Amino acid sequence: MTQRLNIIGGGMAGCEAAWQAAQLGVPVTIYEMRPKVETFAHQTGDLGEMVCSNSFRSDDDEQNAVGLVHWEMRAAGSLIMATADKHRIPAGGALAVDREPYAKSITAAIHAHPLINVTYDEITHLPDEGQWIVATGPLTSGALAEAIQAETGSEALAFFDAIAPIIYADSIDMSRAWMQSRYDKGETEEERTAYLNCPMSKAQYEAFIDALLEAEKTEFKPGETAGYFDGCLPIEVMAERGRETLRFGPMKPVGLCNAHDPENKPYAVVQLRRDNALGTLFNIVGFQTKMKYGAQTRVLRMIPGLEEAEFARLGGIHRNSFINSPTLLTPQMQLKSKPNIRFAGQITGVEGYVESAA
Image (tube, rainbow, N blue to C red):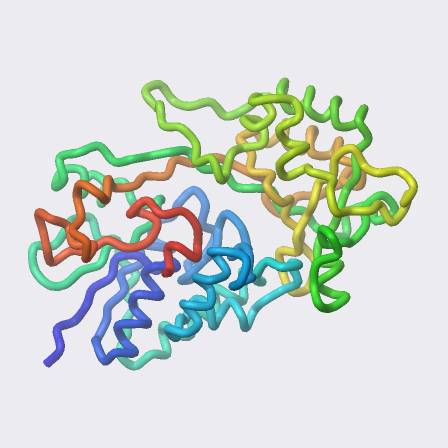
């Protein structure tokens, strides 16, 4: 009889690992602590819930490394990619999904597989027997994180991560904003108009940067010295690195033409991407933030078109923890001190949905 595989964590990595093993005839049990034990970022008890973004980034398998990984995963029968394709929403050349039905489809597929069982309990230790995969992500529960640290005798790698706000579409002033993908990228009209754009003049941009720098922000607790992941910096941290940083980052105006004022090129542009298939929600692209809630609403409503914005979710900051994989794991991702335990996904130090599932 084939030995059962036990997986701790029902996120991208845990679900993909379970699916691949079960498809090969291996019985699997997934242990997911939510909704009994909540995290800062998750909002549901669904498997495969996306928290920071709804994007798998570029889907171009000829020009982009992430797009090539998409192709490889599809060829390998990936549940994560098949479900993403099923719930795809317009995002230019990127692969973005309608996050709620996406997670519900992942949950349904996992529960329907005859070789996969799901147990909604928290695992607080590293088992001595059986085959296990730890795929708990960067928001690993405190008890399990302590157990990992006790076993490895080393400090976890850590950085702080932030999430971007989500806005109700009907609160956006479309007399100021317009729909267009950068450089009109896309094969269909829907793809070429996948992003919502809010233009800024130089004066508006300068006032926005001043307000951003002066806004009240969440501060680290004493003893917290971890840095940020450079690919997901809070907008305030980018602004602190130089007043033009945002204008050459998420607020770059290139490849866009203001449909309401085509003769005047915007000095900066804030882009929003559809967050659900109905188009009732939009997230602000690249606008991860650690501003306190009151400051967020005040500063973000300075953006032209968002003066009356209503927020479905405000941004926030949380600590991510990782193991020091090069020193702790074998090339087969086994924990050197407990070879019956493997690690997978973001807890190993990779960043992003695609890399975690791959």
